[in-house]
Length: 310
Image 1 (cartoon, helix red, strand yellow):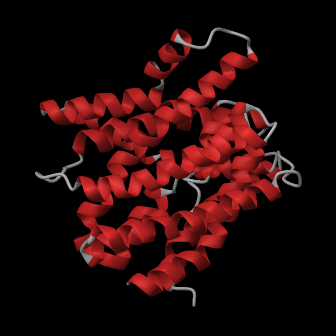
Image 2: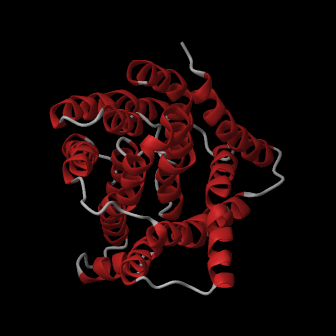
Image 3: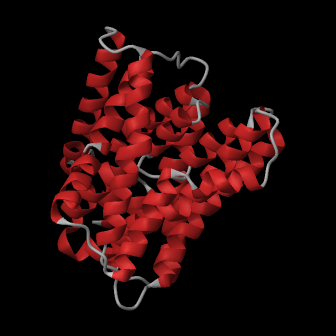
């Protein structure tokens, strides 16, 4: 049975992606404009969104490390396991392997996870939900940036080491997270108008990313990537939530915390998979196809998960 709460959250997402696809298909925006929009999202809007989120998030006085580690050991473990397995058995380049591994483990927390969980479980889910949201970017982006910067240096036959470290430190995502965390810990607050500008630009990140994804798909042929995209979907939509569910049982969590943990694991492939692919010009068709197919499949898989847990 497909639950209305799942449909209500996912249909608007598909609507924005579809609008972007139609704009691209009719060539009302050319590929350069679409890439420019993607770069705006990656380099400006999402870093400011991360800064705002990290600077304002309220963490509990006593951190439930078992819960946080239980989720991210599973998710990051899948990321690294898929990556190193493909390094052994696949001849594809390092960057594309990174995209496949990232997509297999990184969920669509902000546009889908937050409204879905809050609608399904109410205020009782606030703390466990935002704990995972707060830690997702810091945990996942660092290894992904290392992989993509290393792949870029290899392609250019440059030295791998200090140049990669400099690229990571200067990365906009890392800066947004780091500066936001510093502002949070020190109690620093920006002047009202500046904070409002940051909030406004951050709010544009998700719709612009979804629109850019749809538009970009109109320029790529997906025939050759569908098989690999389905592998990503099988791991992300089915295997990861099963793994997190098995771990959550052993942690002895309250029912709502366990439910949030499993639902967040069952979310479809995150939009940042496509943004990383576009930013590093690697595996764009694979990433975009995986996001769209995974989101469509999640209408069924999330309904099953919520029917069991809610």
